[in-house]
Image (cartoon, rainbow, N blue to C red; front, top):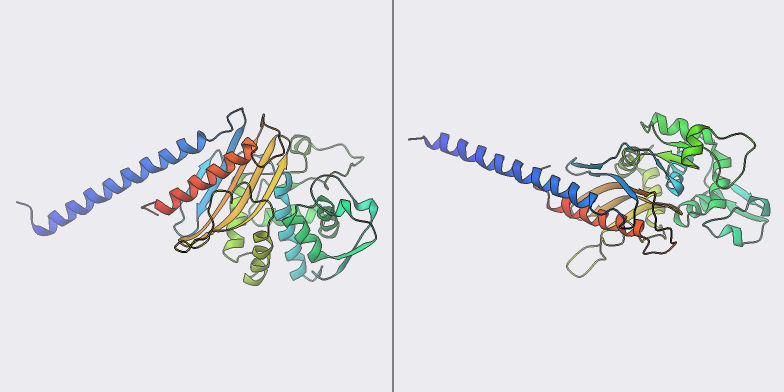
Length: 306
């Protein structure tokens, strides 16, 4: 007959094995679900996510290089705050905006008269919240492309590179990487590293990260990661999403810090080679990102083992 102590030890081992098996099955089911969320008409999806409370990560081909589209504006903002801390820039310093600074695509500045005076802070807010391309170029002129790339490398983002300004032609032939990825490139793994540093207050200091979080929370594009994460109710606190999107005809991207009552999560989801090139809220890539984000949050909320 087993002693009481041995019976308890055996029970603990049995329960642990059961929990590990259930967790493994849950992870396998999660990955299968995420891979099944590919846009129905065609396309690819890669992603990375992390539960910052437990350390659990989720990966689907997360080392894949992708076109950032406007997601690169997040690293550009990070570099602004570094240069402010270093004394190179001031958030309240004026920037002149002229007709020659106007470029196409997203944003509002292209529709305004030239001769405006903005602050660097204004330009950063427009760059993130409205993904304003003209404002982005003003900011790039201030910080410099090389400094953005050097900073990302110093932070451990080895696959993140900004190649050029937005919709500005250059006389120099593009590098092979620029020819392949356009404006900029990254990986889901790189992006969750950067997002985690912001969420934990590890970019410069907590005050700088709080300012960046405030800007990201004002993001106007809410059709991807935030879409299905829910509004607050009487019995359920709101899920707050601080995110930056990026889109091209055949690309839909979103990266975010997701603040829930159970802890913060970070995620970076990229859809590309899309056959659905509609610029609508129901683009298949946008919907795939929204569904993947919801499934990841559901998994993190119900995961039994860190």
